[in-house]
Amino acid sequence: MKKTIAVILLLLVIASVVVVIQFKNIQKKEREVLKYNMRFEEYNKTGLNGLDITTIINKAVNENEQNAVEKEENGFYKDNGQNSILIDIKMIINGKTYRMEQINELGIGSFTEYFAEVSFDCKEVKYHEETGKISYMLFEATKY
Image 1 (cartoon, one colour):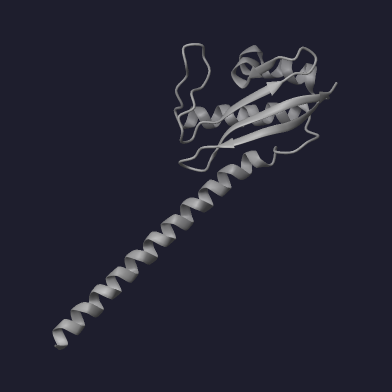
Image 2 (cartoon, rainbow, N blue to C red):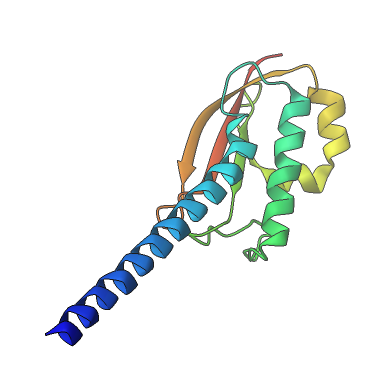
């Protein structure tokens, strides 16, 4: 009888430890996602300028490169459903939307030179379903 109670208590202790470890791991992952998203969420607002846009493009390109995000045949990053981040910039002067890779390819310096004083608003943010990390942001020029 005493052996049975000891075994049951031991199993309860082991199960409790496993549950606590799992809970701590989940909390750690949530903190990591929150920290990751905060770097981009700070741009989820209105009244940004061209310098802010170049900064977030640089952050997104760096993240994609560090995470080895694949590119399509046209040079645009693929949405990998995990840790890719895609950014579009809509310009009101011509109504066109440009991918961050296009702006990066033409030269961030040129973009900054011509659009540093232009006002931009973040119009849309999407998240990866699996990881909760930001997957997409759309910025729109509002005032030239």
